[in-house]
Length: 217
Ligand code: C5P
Image (cartoon, rainbow, N blue to C red; front, side):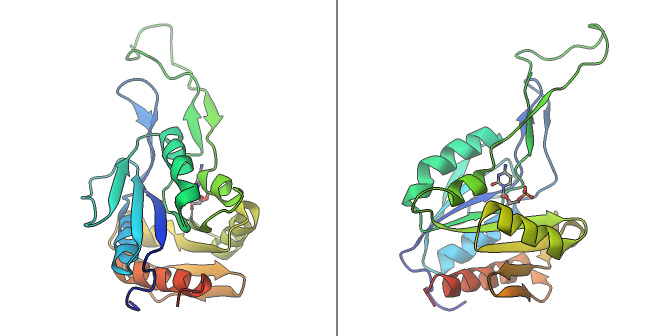
């Protein structure tokens, strides 16, 4: 890692899944392990940045020297990120944010035998990354696209829709849950496939790419 290429920069990240409650004990979530986001938080710290990591529920220790804020739902994550985005130079959305939350979450545990199968109503969650990117004086915004197919097409479409300068694409079968990953970076100059590697190595390459695009390297 180019030494201290983000010295003094303030980096805000999201990582992990979100958990959308159905009732006090049940919910909707996904298989994101948080490992890619935590690796990027560590790499940003090693590059000299001041790092805040907003994390969904994961079983990972807070990286050394990183301020970690644990959240549960997409709305919680949204609240914490929006309160801190204006004070950040770089925002990296790595979290697998649930697209929908339960509109009719129950205050008490749902019981069987109470008039048939419960209906779960969904409402759309805010798009945290798109909202940060649309702020006046927005930080440099980086997204992730986890796809099961058509990586380039979907990742480029997301980059344009969310109006962000850089998106890292990966195939779910290459990355979810494991220690290794395969990333392709998409920016204004085109696509840059990175060699398959550990999430730690890829995180450092991503941080260097961000440092280059932001004129810090
Ligand atoms: O649209 P999609 O969810 O696939 O986009 C993925 C990117 O957008 C990731 O960087 C993710 O962290 C971010 N995102 C977000 N808020 C959402 C959904 C996605 O910040 N509600």
